[in-house]
Image 1 (cartoon, one colour):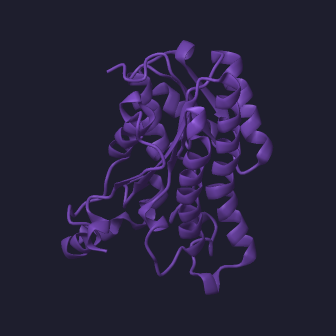
Image 2 (image 1 turned 30 degrees about the horizontal axis):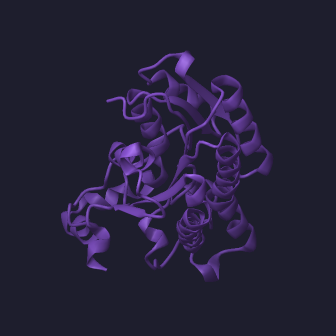
Length: 261
C-alpha cells in the first residue's frame, strides 16, 4: 500500500478494462487519479468504484485522437492538483471495435485508408499527443516523471488480421524505447506493458474461444485470458519508484503466449 503516495496520475481509457483497473489500483496505492475517456457514463461508473473521494480524483471526457484534447486534460490536471507525476496510456480499440466499425480489424489487403486512419488516430495518435504533453510537462516541472504505454504482444508478433491494430501497437513500443533514449537525462522514464489476451470489453466479442480447452491451450499455456487487474499491477510496478531503473522496457504479461514464438 501507498506505493504511489503523493503522486498524481493521468490514466486514459479509464472508462473500462485496464484503464479502470489502473485507476482503482493507483487510488488504493495513494495516488490522486485523473481518469480520461470518451464516454461520460463509463467514467462516472469508474469514479464511483474508487476508494477515494473527489479530493483525490477527477474524470475528464475527451476524444484523445484529437490534438487539442491532450492539452485540455493536462491543463485540468494541473489546475486541480498542481502537478503531474505519472501518465498511463491505456486508451485504444481492439477486436470489439469491428462491431461498431466494420473493416477496422481487417488484414492489410482488405483495409481501407479511412479505417487505417481511424484506428491509428485512436490507438497511436492519442498516445503521441499524451506522451508529448507529458514530456513537456515533466521537463517544465524539473522533477521528472513516468510514462507507461499499454501496447500488446500483437505489436511484436505477426497476425493474420487486425493489421492496423498491430502496426499501431508496434509503433507504440518503439516510440516508448525512443523516449527512453531521448529523455532519461531529464529523469523521465518511459516503459511499455504488452498484454496478451485479456478479458476486457475490447475483446468481449471473441472471448468465447476460451470455451474450448484445446483452443484455449493453443492461445496460452495458462488456458485462460488475463484480467484487467493483473495488467494494472504491471502498470503499477512500471509507474512506481520500485522500477526506478526500469526504462525503455517492454513488460510482457501474456500467460506464456509469446513463450512459444
